[in-house]
Image 1: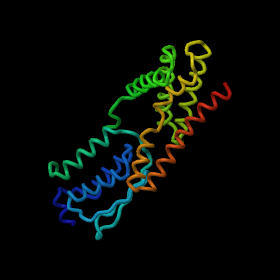
Image 2: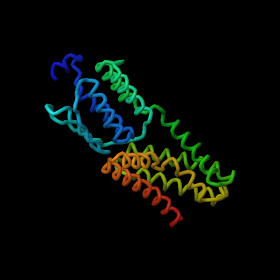
Image 3: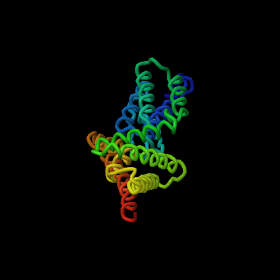
Image 4: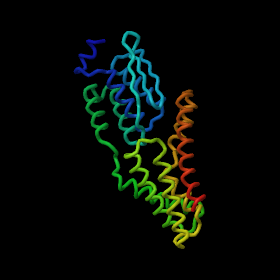
Length: 253
């Protein structure tokens, strides 16, 4: 096994599998997809009989019966479907022998260093536009669309800023929804909007943990009960934080 690793240009296949799994899990991939990707990459690098155990916060990888297991703890998680697709592409090319382990390591390193594919300003503009569309879709009037755009953009900007500055989980969601509720109440009282609940509902939609809920259901259906329940709990707490932020504004203002 040591000779095989040395023959691959001094690339540690275990570290390569763990790097791919870590990037996918940090980007919001389902746990069963992470395990499947790591297993396929291990088999492509002659690490047969490998086993992996993945939760939203931990990756444990056992490369065969003769090598020790390794563990990685995942602290930060976000949503980056483009990065998941890029890592999947590397694993497919490695499995089909279209890419060497050294090339795969270089490509994964580039993907890891690339950061977010879309700039922050574009994320905020997109969230604002989506908020306006959701406001109209939920039967808001034409006069409510622009307040929905402004509230959604301001709330999402607050969410991104606090997510970087404050490491307290769910505080960013609570603060963003509080700002959305406060602006929505202000706009309605000034006559800039008409229906408060339509503006609020449309504006908070970019904050709703849709991917978390989807992955929780998919993990449960795949038999990953621990991961499914933990993702479901995280989605519930995120939705609860959003609801509390709006409830505080409605109660006191």
